Structure formats: C-alpha cells, structure tokens
Length: 106
Image 1 (cartoon, rainbow, N blue to C red):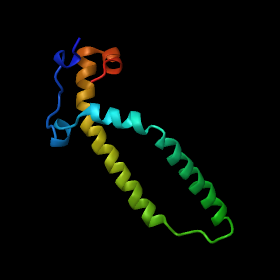
Image 2 (image 1 turned 90 degrees about the horizontal axis):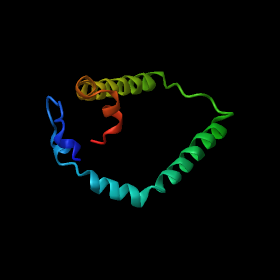
Image 3 (image 1 turned 60 degrees about the vertical axis):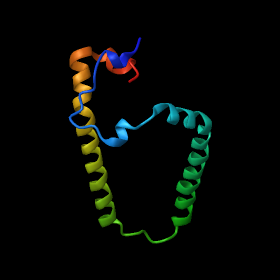
C-alpha cells in the first residue's frame, strides 16, 4: 500500500530542498556510515571530560553575553521548527489519528 496516495501534505509552502530530497540516498549513506556516530561520541566525551580536567584549576570564562546570544538563537530555531512542523502534525492528527501519525512512515 502506498501511503503517499492516502494523504497529501498540508504544507503552506514547500521549499526546494524538500521537493528535491531523496530519502533513499540518505538511507544508503546512513547504512554505510552508522559507525561514525560512535567515533563522534568518543570525541565528544574526550572533549567534555578533558575540558573539565583542563579547566579545573583555571579561572572561569565570562560567557554570559555569548551564552545569551546562543540561547536566543537556539530558541528562535526551535520556534521556527515548531511553526514549520505543527500544521502538518495537527492535520494528520485531526484527519487520521494518533496511530497513523506515529506508525505510517511518510
């Protein structure tokens, strides 16, 4: 059964990168490179714990302004993402139900 024939997306605007996205290419890349995530996790752990050890006896950085800018940008990104995905999510919930919104891969 082709689920794309059941419902059409409820997007007010579809970007070019969304129309041109080929999920099969991404799937093939992910299958070939899934082990990279372990390397990146290892590097992250070394940086976090190594950084804590390195900074243990050093004066703290004054990053209040930089962190405020970072948090504001992160909040804006999250709000834009929520505004972009909420209409489609509510459309699917209203017309097809909760199970459909989780179990049907679209």
